[in-house]
Length: 186
Image (cartoon, rainbow, N blue to C red; front, side, top):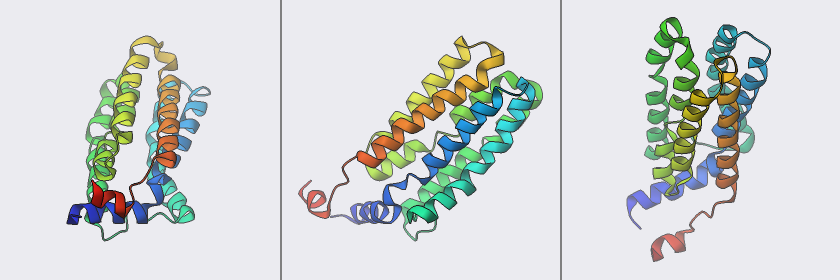
């Protein structure tokens, strides 16, 4: 087993399937979807911008309850995933100006942007769940953005994101995690 294989095995062991962030994301996007039905488009977008900031602290709480150690680990793969999250959050330099100049694009940019780090997760765990999540989320957000009337865009995008999260959480909880014996045989 290579050092990278050992790091991956350690990540799998300490992260406890790493579902705290998707659970938090699904919950927050569900709330965004519900609240967006009660607010004007502008205030719904403002709510989305602020509510999406709750994903990280909520995920830390869920991780504590689930005994996940995704972000605080000494494992460099955990640090890589944290850098992916940082990368995604640098997109706020795009989301905020869009809110000021072209708010119709904000649900699309935030909806897609906050899901891009899933690709790194897929590489870490050697499973396509993150790639499936990122691609299905991107495609479904674009389709909703193109098809749904603008007054329902935020609700539609929030809905497809929650569905993507639900599918990903299911896959994460049911996927086979290679044992050390399986890893050495590969």
